Image (cartoon, rainbow, N blue to C red):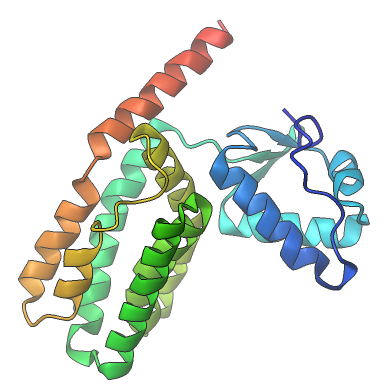
Length: 235
């Protein structure tokens, strides 16, 4: 499927913010599933859809490639990333250890500014969940978890985390669809935020491990079924 086929009402974009708005619209379309995993992105068709020239369009696509939502494969073009079960399992295991490491780095450096920003990001996530905006809730959930990496002062760790962001957004989108809901549960991060402000790092680590596991089996089954369906289509 190409972008031009569904005609999802993108429309032309005000010229003052071509790149940013294209990125935002495409990111939303990918996370929502309007642009399905594996969909091909055809520059000429997309330029006509948005009513833009190739310059800002290519810049926007480059941003989404860096974010991990699009991938360019030689001789086949640019496509929406399609997570495999193996990738999901690797992300699951790596992310757990990364987040524990990030909290170990920041634990004794936490200050009021850290707590204030943590709570502000949690409030934004709760507002997105309350509005039923799945795409915004995924972005806000990512921002909440990003806080500890950004505050850690560990540039290499932050770089590794940033490399996972796009695939995490795709994973969360699949997770929500597997559980038949719009966004995460309102109480899903209550303990996470509480323990991140507490005094016991062992409780925080326990919560991180538990937080990562919740609902994983159902999401894994959802992705396995999707892979089996796709293999059946091409057999």
